[in-house]
Structures are given as C-alpha cells and as structure tokens.
Image 1: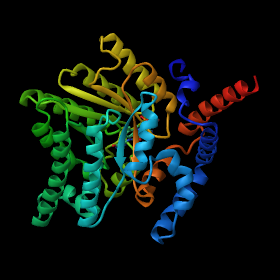
Image 2 (image 1 turned 120 degrees about the vertical axis):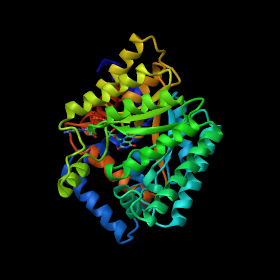
Image 3 (image 1 turned 60 degrees about the horizontal axis):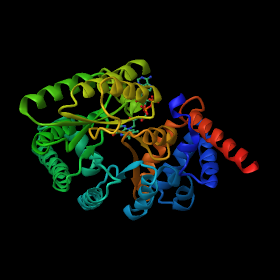
Image 4 (image 1 turned 135 degrees about the vertical axis):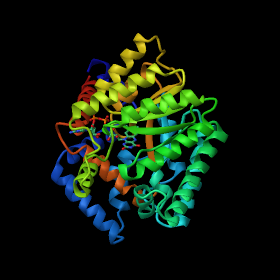
Length: 391
Ligand SMILES: Cc1cc2nc3c(=O)[nH]c(=O)nc-3n(C[C@H](O)[C@H](O)[C@H](O)COP(=O)(O)OP(=O)(O)OC[C@H]3O[C@@H](n4cnc5c(N)ncnc54)[C@H](O)[C@@H]3O)c2cc1C
C-alpha cells in the first residue's frame, strides 16, 4: 500500500547488518516446521534449566525485545525517538508464581512508570495482569468468583496489586495500559479496570483497558463501558487489539463444552475491530484510543476517518502502536506523517520473555502472512541500499 511503502523511512534505524539479520530471522520463522521445533526445544530447555541466553539473545531476542533490563531498553527508546517513534517499555513477566516474584514485578513496573513520567519518549506505562497473581489462583478466582473465602482473598490481593500500579501511574501523570489476557482471566480484570477508571480517570484517561476484538462480545462491552462512564462522569481509555490467543480460546471452549467466545472468521474480527475504532472516535470527547495493530487496512481506515472528522494527525487522545521488531514500514511512515506512534518494547530476563517470543514466532510462521510482508519490505530496502552503494 502506497502510504506504507517508503522503505527508506521504514528502516532508517537499521544498519545493513541488522537488516540482513532480520531477513534471516523472518525467513526462518516463515517455516511452520522450524517454528514448531524451536518452540518445543525452547520450552524443553526452560523446563530443564538449560541456558538459552547464548542462542536467544543475539537472534530473536534482539529482534523483538528492548533488552534484559530497563537500562538496556532505554538505549532503544532513545534510538526510536530520534525518528519521532515513541516507546511503551513493557516489563515482560508472565505467570509469576511466588509472592516475592510478584512483588519484584510490581517494583519493576513502578520503575518503568517513573521512567515514563520523566521521559517524553515514553507516553504510557503498561502491565500484564497475569504477572500479578499466581496462575492457578487467578484462573480459579475468575471461574468461581467469590464462591470460597480463599478465592475472595486471592481476588482481593490481585485487585490491590492492580490498584497499586494504577495509583503509581496516576501520581506520575502517566496513562497506564492493562493488557488483555485469555478469557478465563478477563472478567475479573474487566471489573477491576472499570473500578480503576472510575477512581483515576476523573480528569483524563489514565487507566486503559484492552479489548480483544476477536471476541464477539467486545463491541457491545465497549459501548456499554462508554455509556456507563458518560453517565457517571469519568473518562475511558481503550487499547484495541484483535487478540493473541485465538487457538487456545477455541480449544478451551471445545474442551470444556461452552460456545467459543471468538468470532467465526477473520472478516468478522476485522469488522469488529474497525467498528470499535469508529465507536471510540465518535466518543473522543471522553475516550482515548490506543490502536495496537499491524493491519494496514485498519490503519488506513483510521487515518481516513480522522481526516474526515477533522481530527489532527497528532491528536493526543489517539496513539497507534506496533510491536518492536515488526511492521516498521507502518510505524516509521505514520510517524513521518505526524501521527502519534509508539513501539511496544518488551524487556526483561530472557527466561521471562520466552513465552512472548514463542507467540511472536507463531504469529510470523507463514510466508503468506506477517513474515512474508516483513521479508518483502526488507528485501526492497536491501536492494535499494545495494543500488545506491554501487552508484
Ligand atoms: C501494540 C500491541 C499490543 C498488543 N497487546 C495485546 C494484548 O494486550 N492482548 C492480546 O491478546 N494481544 C495483544 N496484541 C496482539 C494482537 O492481539 C494480535 O495478535 C496481533 O497484533 C495480530 O493482529 P493484527 O491486528 O496486528 O493483524 P492481522 O494480521 O490483521 O490479524 C490477525 C489477528 O486476527 C484474528 N484472526 C485471525 N484469524 C482469525 C479467524 N479465523 N477468526 C477470527 N479471528 C481471526 C486473530 O486475533 C489474529 O491474531 C498486541 C498487539 C500490538 C501491536
């Protein structure tokens, strides 16, 4: 698509050697067999505590992650900001187990929120709710909310952890996004998000919930949430994504015998996503919007709607985002046209990031999909650079 095709802008940040490395990585990931084997080996090595750093850090980790610590991620943030691309530094910690580990995660996210408060290059703080409760406890709590005293206690502890992070963001004047998770966890997360919005979104959208638009109930949920907030007089913030757990959701529904929460096909997910963007734009007086997607059609549609509605490209209530290492042709070209663009930049210990990296590899495992598109643009840019170096 014309708008996104300037590869010189798209890959300005990448040296020739980095571009070559990205090409090799995406070529490998375009093979479903390679992705499957690598995923299995990574899980096995993690389970057996075999060191993975030496192979993972210079390859997929450096392609998709900001570093092993916030200090390492800051170097990437600076580099991106030189090209007007912002960052959302995301401490990746999924399914922490002990209370001690969970407290460490909270400390780390507060430090990242401090950094966001002090840096214009980092417009948001973010956290993944499943990092704030031991996995079994959270799932049980969500499935049987309030049925047993222990569940209520676990739910209360989880709520308190979320509140601490929302309050930290509010105190520093930094909006905070709460990632969306698999369905069995989401009901409790939604309830707490709504409560937090009511407390912290009195003057502007500080707390952002995430809506996975592959769920067929989410557009209705969005409209209800906006109506409720309007009635009670607070702002809403939403990160819109399509959703990352489609296969697991369908499998779980089949296994446990309930109707799948996911739209029947890609077209209906796409329509729901675009409709949700429209609903947010129509309610921009009280809603802020963070559009997390690599879908060119949805972003062209967003830009066209903004133009038609007279909304400036850099309206502070609208930000678009792609994951670090993916779709630079979208991020850098939109930033060059003055849109607010932020890269989601995960960082953290390599072993914490393995599930994230496996998801990225799986998302890229088809030459007809994301990988093919990345390869297409990388090859155009490499050819362009080769041509220049020969003249
Ligand atoms: C900045 C950012 C933040 C994100 N945060 C989260 C998060 O908090 N939680 C989360 O779950 N995900 C998150 N994601 C991942 C996101 O949900 C998608 O998995 C990913 O972005 C691919 O969707 P897309 O819109 O980019 O691209 P597309 O390639 O247009 O869409 C692919 C997506 O469409 C949906 N889909 C594909 N086939 C079908 C089908 N047959 N039926 C129904 N639906 C289908 C699936 O959701 C699939 O992931 C985030 C992504 C970004 C860019």
